[in-house]
Length: 94
Image (cartoon, rainbow, N blue to C red; front, side, top):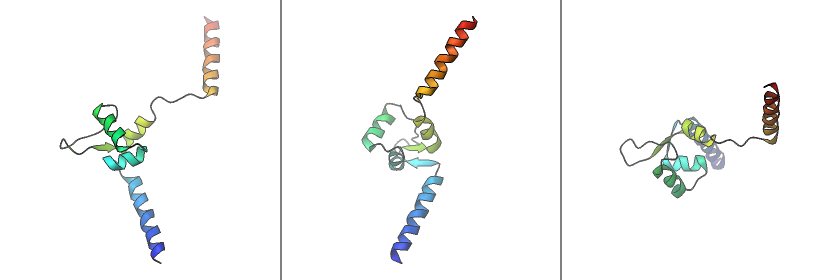
């Protein structure tokens, strides 16, 4: 019974975490799977979007972190081949 209760509490915590829009520094570190020291380096260099509402504690907007993760996508071989074919076709039209 106790184990079942712990599992339910854990599931509720995960659900609440998924709904959060603003993450603390520690939550962002876990969300991004980055060490705290590396995340701090990224914030101090201004590489990753973050907030310091009172100048000390660091917070992150989850949606902006997701956008940051999606920057610089690596194209697949198929996408590169399609792009090359399109360039060849467009250069022949000129």
